Image (cartoon, rainbow, N blue to C red; front, top):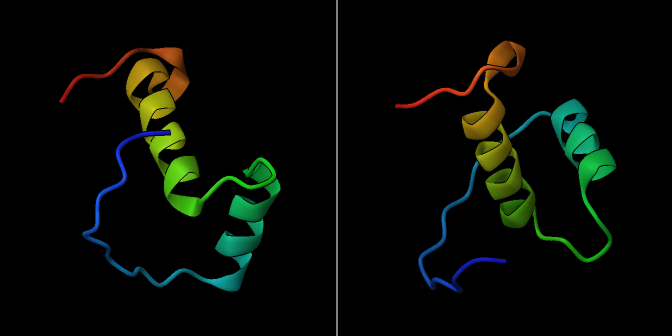
Length: 54
């Protein structure tokens, strides 16, 4: 999923957050792929199901 960019960054999350991300990830899916999927979903559906634009 997406372009393979060489630039990377690290973020710190609580173990509880990592566990929640792990429960959403597909087998073999990267955290970046999951986060991109969540961002796309949020932009399309928004809070309460309404599309948001920024």
